[in-house]
Amino acid sequence: MKTSVYIATSLDGFIARENGALDWLPGSDGDNQGNGEDFGYHQFMESVDMLVMGRNTYEMVLSFGEWPYGEKRVIVLSSKKIEIPENLSKTVASRSCSPIELVDELLKSGAKHLYIDGGKTIQGFLNAGLIQKMIITQIPILIGSGIPLFGELDRDKKLRLIKSHALDSGFVQSKYEVLE
Image (cartoon, rainbow, N blue to C red; front, side, top):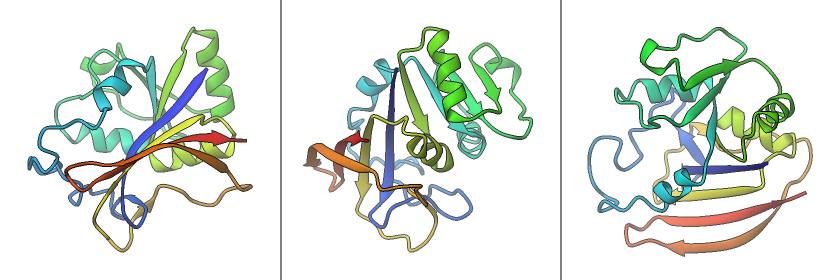
């Protein structure tokens, strides 16, 4: 099974402010700094069977109003019970297990490509050696503090740069293969 990360960070490596706010991220307030470009997100989503995210990311996405994942299956990893609105109950489920246990379960269910999202969830999958590819878009802003994309690791993680390119918006998107 393939597991991938697709995420944006500030130049100083944060995925959100300490309180989870994304107000620094272009487009979060309806502006169109990216000039309508989706930075390969649609194509990436077409390749994904399901998403795995943590509770904090799930709650943030719920606050957006419209559920952005359509009929795509979503698994929320959380040690606490989460509320799933009735309109999402067919596509969203929660689990309380390790990344290895979840991947084993999803592999048996026929999943082929997982999109891993959320800081702690990405870190857990990375520490378990379960991330193969990362697409990271750096936004040219320094926010000084917040929720880091990467935290403590149990060992060094070697990456191989597949491609990096500057976008017209000033963003820099880099694709990495995770080498173990």
